[in-house]
Image 1 (spheres, rainbow, N blue to C red):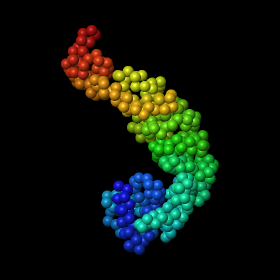
Image 2: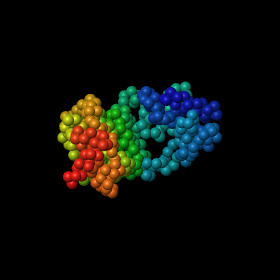
Image 3: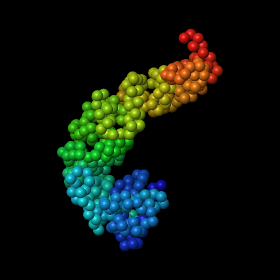
Image 4: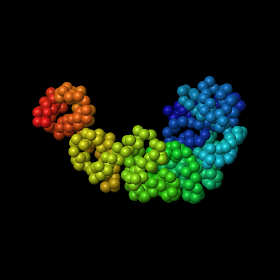
Amino acid sequence: MGMQLVMTAKRILEKLESSGFEAYMVGGCVRDMLLNRPLHDIDICTSARPEEVISLFERTVPTGLKHGTVTVVEDDVPFEVTTFRTEEGYSDYRRPDRVQFVDSLKQDLSRRDFTINAMALDRFDRLYDYFGGRRDLERQVIRTVGEPRERFAEDALRMFRAIRFSGQLGFSVGEKVLSAIRIHRRLLEKVARERITHEFQKLLQAPYVEQGLRLLWSSGITRDVSPFHYLHKGLREILSFSIQALTERERWVLLLYHMDEQYRASFLHALRLPKAFVKEIKRLLRHLEHYEHVIDVEDIPAYDLIRLGEEDFVSLLKLNQLMLNRSVATDLRQQIRTVLDNLPIRHPQELCVNGKDLQLFRKRSPGPWIQEELDRLVKAVVEGKVPNEREAIRAFVMEDEKHE
């Protein structure tokens, strides 16, 4: 996929160049190519104006003409093609007040955030690196293009992006950059919350998440920048764990578990996370609090395992083992599957009767009693009191009705 993406991008570059324009692959895709990381998209910059780009390609979408961006669709893949530009005035600390088109690649690259994101490649794989980006890749350090305080005054989100890139790449943050974040961190409160949430989610998905969270702490952001100040108290303990083996949702739950209960709702509300995701992590958090000392598969009744389900039970044990033992069993999922394989049913939905069957057995109208009875039957089947067979369950239900 990556090689095909590059070949398609080079066709776009060639078409622009054959029409008399300069054109380059630019930014994060160049960084990732130099690091041999997977490519997901390729951005292109060019001396061509937006209207000239539109006239050259059959399939285009005018996604950001005001800022010089046209989306060119080639081989059903979108490529953002942006005119060389400079930016001026950032009165809201996030977007330029004015964009000016220019003819110089170097001018365009000079407005970008970090040196490792300010490199370009032409279609012959020649690298254009005016600010030491390749050297910083080799040194594994994140530095801004120019003075950090100027870059952060232009777009305060860049402070959070520096921390997120550290978590994604395992790079250190340059001392001047970290110092500027400590001084200007309160500017983050002027940034749209959705943009910060997007960066924080990427950090919690990152392979070097511990490094990123450590920077979040040392930068002072968790001390007094809303809503991350809710994390400050619990983050110190979390940083004593090795959390790389945790999934994203397990990392979220660990953060919430170490937060004062009274602040959890405010934190989640402030980040404006998707409702389905919030519901999921709240459910897992409830399990964690209810079974706070369960660290082995044998520590929980079979019915509870069935009710929780494999994924939630894996997460529950991983988190408890991490917090209580400081390590997670490598064969945890296999242990759980072995137990499930030896049970009559692995999930409540595998019960061979449903609510309509119960109404027929008992000749009763619908009501809350149906779910209560289904839960009781699942428990009875799992505990071996009745086989998971329709007639056996009907007899079990009717026998109980005689004694009511």
